[in-house]
Image (cartoon, rainbow, N blue to C red; front, side):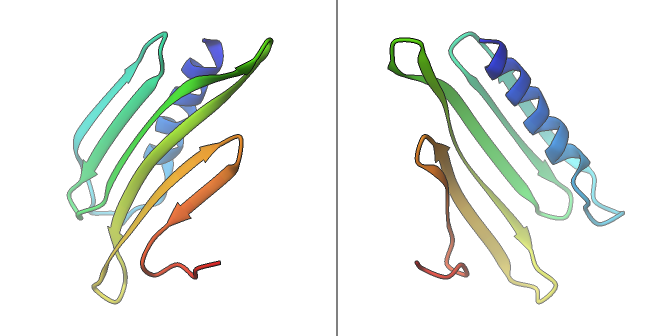
Length: 103
């Protein structure tokens, strides 16, 4: 439970602290932390969007792992919108996006 709260708050803090264009402002922000997990999302005035949710998964006695899934999108310097969806769990971080190399 403490891991969920700490991870959720750290995730939100890191996202809000990430460098953005000086003129970008947060226009929508929602977050929720509960005993079952966490979720948050935000939009900025420059079109950047991010959402993430997570929960603890029981792998066995005395063994839990945090499962996280989310997505974010932003406009690149070339004017294109880049989107990434991802999961992170006992199998590691797994991002997907059209512009990412396929391994």
